Image (cartoon, rainbow, N blue to C red; front, side):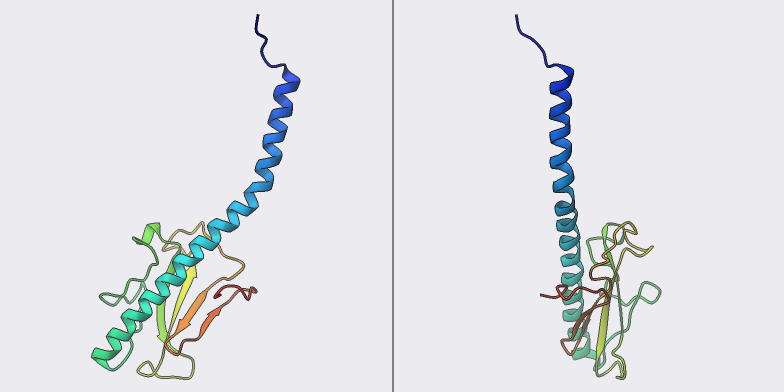
Length: 144
């Protein structure tokens, strides 16, 4: 006749599974953040390519944001605004005219995209038409 598990055996298995899950969760959460950060960087590069095409035609870059959209330049990073982790905008580089230089920003988790996402390590990502890459966070590994 077969026996079932005792309460002690079940509790030990549950404890082992809990310990393994608590060790794996931070690594998984970090992986998700890095993946979402990559979405922001890809969106910045794609938007910069569109800005260069716009500049070739109009001899200036385009400033844009959710409040002031420009056709063909999305202000979100993913396939749709609600499914995105970054809100994009563009402005003239500090100390420059818009016809000479544009700086794109990808701000994580604003109220216009998935507000649950945060990236305290890198914060807001930036890319300029001069090739300057930046981040508002403390990490130096945001643009490897």
